[in-house]
View 1: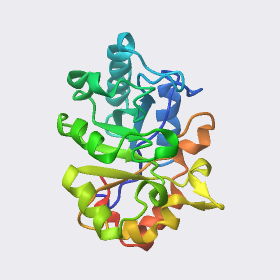
View 2 (view 1 turned 30 degrees about the horizontal axis):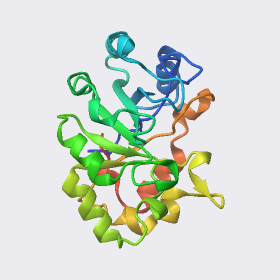
View 3 (view 1 turned 45 degrees about the vertical axis):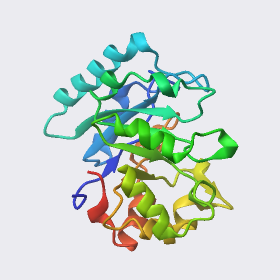
View 4 (view 1 turned 120 degrees about the horizontal axis):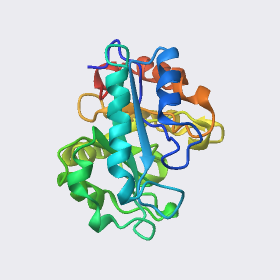
Length: 230
């Protein structure tokens, strides 16, 4: 799993706060040589413009239609990004039946107190109610897992069955260095235990859809291509 694939499992369309339609995103992903592209719009958060309950069926059908249209060229996946801050998202009343129709679910700000994110155990409990893969979006490893050694981080994530997104986009850097590189020792500990994905969190710059080279270079350097989710 992972060898030969070129994935981006984190993009936003006009269904939430992105500026491009899902069709434009898939078209760009195809032109950029990706094998898998996911639309993962914000869901039911007050933080930004996001998907609401009445839009969910249209959202999923739009993505599935694109999957059929591009069948054999690129795999088009459906996901959402859930804000783990309980003041902005009703985490206790997520539509489990709908989320289980998706291909995976991302949770952002998990264990990140400065962002008000819920603790990892809370998200793990929610994930246990879902049958689809669940993962952490662009985590700031140094703050989210402060005080834990890399093996402890890997063991906890593995016990909860969560995958982790590797993202090199500019918002997810400190001192100009991507979070994933600052926490390379932690990411290395995931090998064989925790699945990883690659995402760019593309919103407003279309070229970001296929801008996965930096993350792939990192994954290849640390020998974790076999640990990719797809």
